[in-house]
Amino acid sequence: MWRITSPWAFLLLNLLLFRALAEAESSNVPMDKAEQEALYAVIQDLVGKWWNGSDLYPDPCGWTQIQGVSCDLFDGLWYVTSLNIGPILGNSLECSSDAKFNPQLFQLKHLKSLSIFDCFSSHQQQLTIPPSNWERLASTLESLELRSNRGLTGNIPPNLGQLSNLNSLVLVGNSLSGELPMELANLVNLKRLMLSVNKFSGQVPSALFANMAHLLILDLSSNHLTGSLPASLCNLSSLLKLDLSNNQFQGSLPAELGKWTQLTLLDLRNNSLSGAMPKLGSLRDLLLAYNPWGGNLLELEWGDLQNLSTLDLSHMGLTGAIPKAITDLKILRYVAFDGNQLSGTVSSKFADLPSLTTLYLNDNNLSGKLQFPRGFYERMGKRFASWNNPNLCYSAITSGDVPRGVARCKQDQDHSTEEFKSNQGVDEGSFDEHSGLMAPLIMTPAASASALWWAIVLIMML
Image (cartoon, rainbow, N blue to C red; front, side, top):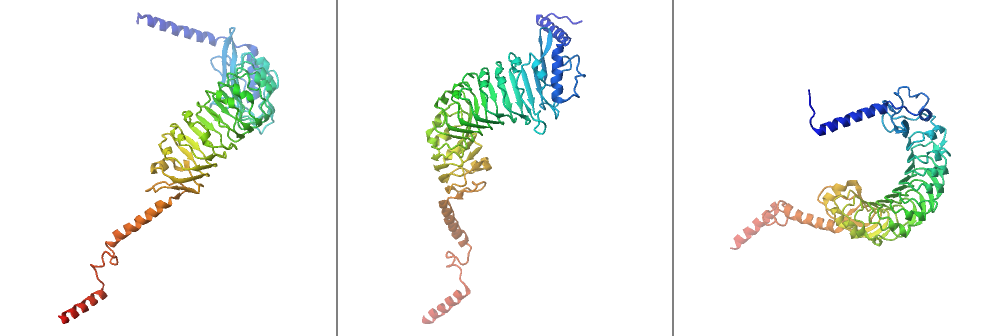
């Protein structure tokens, strides 16, 4: 018989026994009856009446749980805290072709997280977000995500603004439309607000973000939003990522954006913005392409952007030279200056950037000689582009990849031609019977006969 003498062994044994008893006790705890009925009704209206939970023992929170449903104990009973519907995992519940919202959703009074993914198809009858009753979840719901539901249409209901505990609102890849309701400003605990890839239009309310001091991620990309950037953006001092790309915003960036000391991603591509470039030393990704920005690259303090990894300033109407200071940003990975009116030469120090994988310089007015080593072109491949710069050429490369659409420098061609001719003369002359170097040594038959006749004449004269 084993004897346990160590106090640590006794402690471990007690912990294991306590856990086993706790699990056995919790598995026997019943689920609130009204809660179970509400959950079953919600699931059936989403996945189909074929689902009845008959294979669950003793209930959805017991030994056999539903994939995508999480529970917790409140006052000795099980209640649903998380509901995730959609093809996320292999055994996740997936929606039927006639999926719809059931109003009993708002009876799940301890629900903290609701996620419905790829559920409402655009081929079925179009649905809208329930316009009311969200206040019933105001004290508990922390995360609401409706993603990739092309059949989900209509406006964002103002009633969502009553979800005062919400820290994540994600309505991405749906077919929602209309203007953004000012009531969203009441969601003061938000850390993530993502409304991208919808059909929202109109101006963003100027005070929408006035009280969202905790917001970390804001994504309004790929909509039809217009007007100037809302002034309340400047209040988002904790912001890490801002994506407003693929909209119709106009005007310039507020100077107060310099307060964003933690911002790592700024994506404003495909708008109609202009003015001074932002001075944000924390940036890792600066994406401003396809805006009528104008100006030149010397306006930016490049030395303050040592964290920059991705730089996309293509098609912005930029003029002037490419600052050599850009080649001192050692973690640059992606650089795009194509489609501008940049002039001057291209620094060969781009080849010294250890992480650089992409460099687009095409469609500008750059000039001079590309002096990158052969290994640079081999490393970059098709991710280096410099065509459509009429006065740009590349220096001689012995073999391997050369920049497409760029001519070889004329002086290199002339030097190579002269060298070739010189080599032709020396090498071939050593073996060519018609070369000037060999003429004194080898004579043709006619020359031999003439020499013999002159020899006879000289002998007779003697």
